Amino acid sequence: MMDPSKLLRPTELGLYCEAGDFFVDPWRPVPRAVVTHAHADHACWGCGRYLTSNEGRRVLQVRMGHEAIVDSVEFGESVDLNGVKVSLHPAGHILGSSQVRLEYRGEIWVVSGDYKVEPDATCSPFEAVRCHTFVTESTFGLPIYRWPSQQAIFDEINAWWRSNRDAGKASLLLGYALGKSQRLLSGLDPSIGPILTHGAVEKLNRAYREGGIDLPPTAYAGTATKGKSWAGVMVVAPPSAHGTPWARKFAPVSTGIASGWMTIRGTRRRKALDRGFILSDHVDWPGLLGSVDATGASRVLVTHGYTSVVVKWLEEKGLQAEVLATRYEGERDDGGGEAGDLGEGDLGETITLGEVSNEVQIALDGEGESETEDDA
Ligand SMILES: [Zn+2]
Ligand SMILES: [Zn+2]
Image: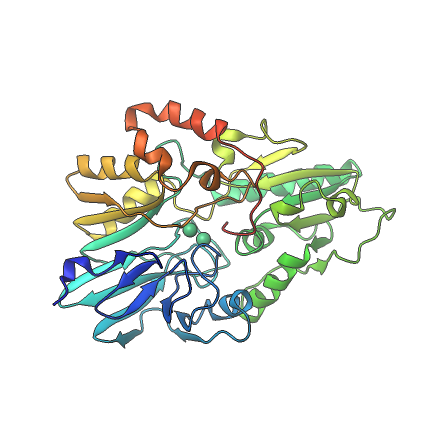
């Protein structure tokens, strides 16, 4: 009989629940996947069946294709998968993002997926769920990451847009197509000027609006032609649009990016970026520690990010903590590709809490120019 303290284990295909014969956020196609959210490093194309939240069903279907078989449940509703009780609870990361609660023979696990505890008008707020074992991400698991208030950031963005307009320029705001873009849109003040979007963003806006999320009016910028005046227009696009002919046609344009990495980077290492705004859909350091506390978990397994730093911190607080190796990538929305360049867990393996300044330096040095479509 399976040991319930090993309710999930990493395999070649992903995190496997043997008792229930399913995977949580597998990285390869499997027959049965329980999916926390639709970002590419958590939702793998080609699975036999997906289980996700009702709130997330549309965006997952858009991402996985119309052929994909997507089952969905309400937050908090339990389903029985071969004797394992499974329920989904809001993670506050993007529309529909869930934590997965597993219960088997009295043992309770919660897998956070990606999560944040800051307010976000475009998804249900994070709910702490009591459990024995909590699986947490650690994308921003260093004490230097503490998010400013969302309203302060939205105010900065709107002030930047207004001053660009007054200077006769367009504003190009970069953020990941799924989640970050819609959160940015929810904070824009449409009285400043018209809002245009990149096609990748507009496609998901539609899914968000169909899901009942209120976004300001937007228009697809695809048909925009060169030579027209774009003064005062706000354009929201994924980071991969940066530096492309498509982006250049909005000239004269001021370009900004919204990312948690702006905490340490500012804009100084990014060519031709005028502004960096600190806005992340991942949990910051105080949020991570507070969430671990709120679960009451005695054991914490730490995935993608500064895994070993977080493990060490939790151990010092008397918890049982371990690194859980996964292929999740964390936030790559500035196109810097930390996770890609440095590898999941690489930093955490060699850095201790006393060496945080070195870590920041390594993160800076590790910045590459790779672009990826996903994860805000
Ligand atoms: Zn992730
Ligand atoms: Zn994500």
